[in-house]
Structures are given as C-alpha cells and as structure tokens.
Image (tube, rainbow, N blue to C red; front, side):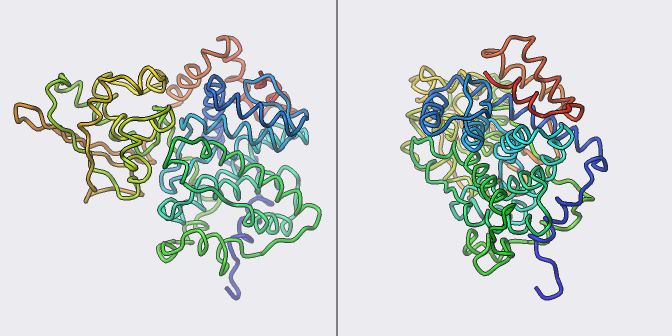
Length: 458
C-alpha cells in the first residue's frame, strides 16, 4: 500500500470535499426517487405485525424527538433509525443495487433523514449526504462481486454501515481524518448473516436499521477523537478479507474507486415492482408472460422447472421444506415455488399474496409442489438476475421463457410514483401522500430537513 491511498482515505476525501451543487441534476433526481420509494415502502410496512412489535420494543428502550415514518411515535435518534430501517426493508420491496447484491436505501435513507433532522441540516445538505453515502455503499458492494452473500453475510448490512457512517459524518461536518476513523469504527460494528432466511424469523428486517445505528455511533465517536483502524477495507482483517473468506481473491477493489465522482454507480439501483426477493423477479416475469402468451390452464401442468444461479439457492430454494409451504409472509417472499405458483395462477405477486389466506391456499400450494429447480449453466449473475421457467404440460407439450433483469433497465419516474401512491393508499389520504411526494421531490429547497421528517411521522 506504500505510496497509494487506501479506500478509507479515498472515500473520506470524496465525502469531505464534494460540492453538492456540482452533483449532476439527473443524479440528484435519481436519489430523490430512491428516497421516495424507500419512504413509500416504510408506509406500507406499518400495517404489518413486525412493525408494531418492533416499535413496542424500542419504545421500551428510549424516548426522544426523532420521528418514525407513518407511526405515531418519537424515539431517540438511533432507535428511530433502527425502526425506520425495519420499515423500509421489512417487506423486501426496497431497491436493489444488482451488481453488489445489496439494498442501499434501507440504511442510507433512515440515517440521512434522522441525522439531518437532528442537526437541522438543509434539504440540500441532506440530499448531498445521501447521494455520497449511496455511492460509497454501491461501490463497496460492487467490489465484493457477490461474495458477501455467497459467504453467508447480508451485504445490505455490511455496505450500509459504511455508506451510512459517511452520511452521518458529512452531516456532522467531520474532518477528513475523522471520516477515515469513522469507517474504521464502522468495521467493528458491521454484521448481519443470512441465517434468518433459513427459517420463519424476522431478524433480517432489522439489519439495515442496525447498520444505521452502527454508523451514527461510529461517526459520533470519531467526531470526539475516538480512533479506529485506517485500513477498514484492505487490511489483513478488513472488510474484504474477513467477510469474503475464500471469495476474497475474486474481489476487485478497483471497482470501488475507479471513476469516483465521474460515474455514479448508485443510479443503477433497480426499483422493485414485486414485494419479494429480487432474485425471484425474473422468474415471476417469465411465469406471468407464459401465462398470458399461452393462456395456461394450471390444472393441465405436469411439472415446472426453474433454472437458478447457484448463489440464489439458499435465498429462494432451500430449505425446500420451509419454502414449499410457507409458514408466514416472509418465507413466502423468498420462495421460488410459491412465487412461480402465484404468477401462473394469479398473474401477479403483490401484498394480497402476503396474506395468510394466500400462502395457505391449497390450490397455490399444490402448484408449488410441482416446481423444482436446477442450477443454470448460463446464469448472468452478478451482472444480471436471470430466470428461466420451463413448463411441461400433461399432454407432453413443453413451453419455456427466460427473463433477465439488469441494473440498466430502470423503472420510470411514473412507475416509481405510482408505486409510492399504491404503497401509501391504505395509510395516507391522497392529499397527504401527494404532499409527501412533492416535498421529497423538492427536498433541496427545504431550509430545514426537519420539516420533511415531521411530515413523514404518523
């Protein structure tokens, strides 16, 4: 490393010196749409049991003046960030940065909103900090080349801790040296495994919010001179060596820094149009297209095969016993069997499919039993999420379709806004939803970011 800046130093310089006014307008628009999407996902989650149990638990730990999105509560800053992160990520409807297999906004947006509100930052400052944190998180994820999840760690939590630490650091006006230290301290708090996906548990929902808690803690400690390691990423026991294990050799750290401030990676984040694991979306698209194109009568289906990438197996295929017959809404969102069944029978996968009446529907479960998987020799992972569905009918006919979802196939602004309005319709009046949309999309003109967090509260 002699004579060469390490990533902590590079990221600190990027965050400390970037002039928010120099960020291109299209990049700012992308960040605002991501923030709007995250907020809409949070509103939608407030109707679910995990949200109310989470809030009750956190209210027993603290009180404060930080707002919870869509819920009538105020908490201490870090607990509000934790709660808002649970809400954004809780329905697995949040954006995915596909090249790094990570959800970016679920940690970065709650951190940016919470800290900006606390320090009365302007909307311009909030947006600039959010953009910089999203960018760093995306690049850290990209450099791992999908290895974090292969190793069993939740990339969303890992990269979100560092991106959010830099968001908090920017809003707290940390110096270059303090930003380096904040990243080192973030390393000691980064965590989160994929074990919750092996059974019907809720722990994964708290990962992004916990990343935000860790980030604010790291930035606050660094602000007071508490020191952390300078090589948070490349060090012998840094992020890539420790959390990638045998996959470390495949990492490309040049992806983290090349073109920084010239090419904005986070803008390639993909908006979800189904409330389910992004690894399922290509299969759902394929199944829905087959349903429409062939007017399939599901009673005539003999068997269904799905060609999957190896990395997706523990996410959406195994353990098969739990995913063939989901015991709750969360395992239903991570089941290739149930997802394909819903797509063929109903031609959709939305919030209705997360209701108990759906994931216990005998007709859907019977079709799910006909789905099997095998490894896809032509998988596009990690560049794209590909999915091939092959259906054999009882008369011997075989039909198939392959779909690919890539980071350069973005949703339109109209689609993102429509999703936001749909997500909020059960909890907000149309006028209130429109007021939130308008304020988010004009956030850079807010004198005080607290106006936005106050509007978001329940």
